[in-house]
Image 1 (cartoon, rainbow, N blue to C red):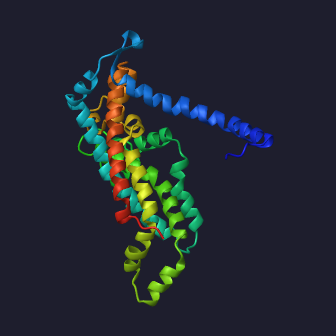
Image 2 (cartoon, helix red, strand yellow):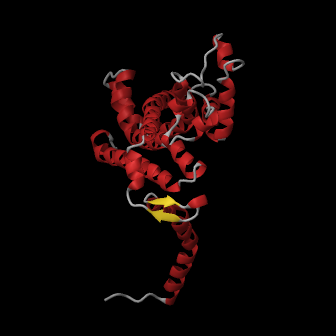
Image 3 (tube, helix red, strand yellow):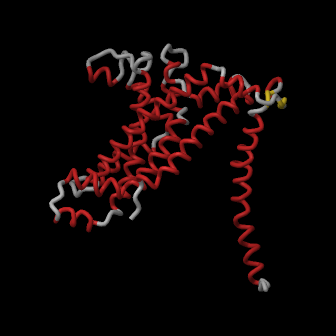
Length: 295
């Protein structure tokens, strides 16, 4: 037999609902409604001057799989993720291990490496665009060379990767540093007693105990890399011959949805990206238990 709620309990429940209602309404309006609207628009053709939607079934998806630009931009996004993510994780891990030691000026070094995270992406892009300048850029001045960093199709992606890795090091380093500080010292003391070397300890104690944090960084890193938009858009000139080599699938979505006012096809493009990210996330979650170790 269910016990009736007292008047005081009912009042507290009502107040609780009233306090969480703005958050729930905000999630429904700002998160869930756009998801369903995007799915619906992917089956529609936008009306004249961007007004109204006409249901056209699978035509956008048929066009999608026949469009070579979709696959070329998707390849660019995947290439950026494949190159940048291992570099970011490896360098962040090395920095975290080094800055976890007792050393003079450790706090200053941590602050310096974290600074890019508090800078606006537009400011970062503008500074690096100046550094990459062929005629008076800092990099060419330091190397005493005249390298076309952002206009040569063969190295333009490398330039974008350099900026992407540099700008994300601080966040990953702080996360890994927090993970390192949570590892009990007893493990290292026991390994030292057993005669374990530093390299052996790193790969058999540090890496396994950091694997939950590494898993989180890899998973979110893949999502972020595949959604890359701002760096190529702000660093590269869209009229440059190197632009097709760095143009990402998210920019293609932006181009169709906002520049060409074809929101239906743009929605189909972004749905393809969502499906790819969902499949990768599903695979990562299924394989988590095989290489992620919890204490």
